[in-house]
Image (cartoon, rainbow, N blue to C red):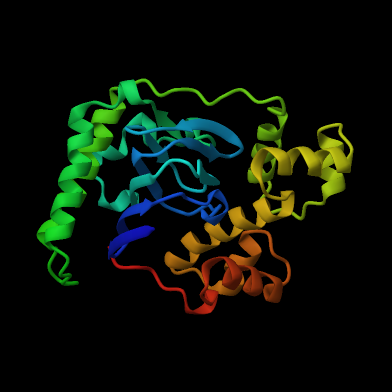
Length: 278
């Protein structure tokens, strides 16, 4: 049994989902150009962010910053229910934009808040959003609805409350060096990169690199690199940059290769991409 309710307000997206006996393989592994807030109502499993693991449990919150590769891996034997909010920083108050949890200084592993840290104040904000979303689903592009206004207000409130908390660190992993590989790939998105070059840089064989990377992240080195490049491309296209220019800016030397990758990941054509209204 599945239930999925979602609503979009321009670059702001809210969803409430419920899965009975969830299939871990059915959850998308992705990266995107905006922020994402996940609040788990019920369920058990793991959050995976850039190959690092956090425990997925009721009343936990995960904040994902732009371009952080992530997915969830819930256990089948537990019902999985969550609230998810996607947003861009242009819906934030000036004060919220300055919060350290949104900073890129520690970007790469998300910001995770365990059960014992998440207060009733934070939980109630998610409930308020959900209640008002269900009771107000009419959208007017020129006039924000009550639900949209409450959603924008609550996001700022949630982020402020989270900023006073101390996030948990991810679980240590036997292949922690893979995180350094990810950082290296992110620093060289615009460059032509070969597996041989990456393996040589980290003093490992190409086989060991590919095996360890997939074991920790669930994705190949180049699938990861392509996902990140397309996420950056989406942002540039939304900001109005020409598709041919964007392809080169994110590391594609052949536009046809970029076109196919973009369409496969996003489901749309890069030349037709437009900035979504705020």
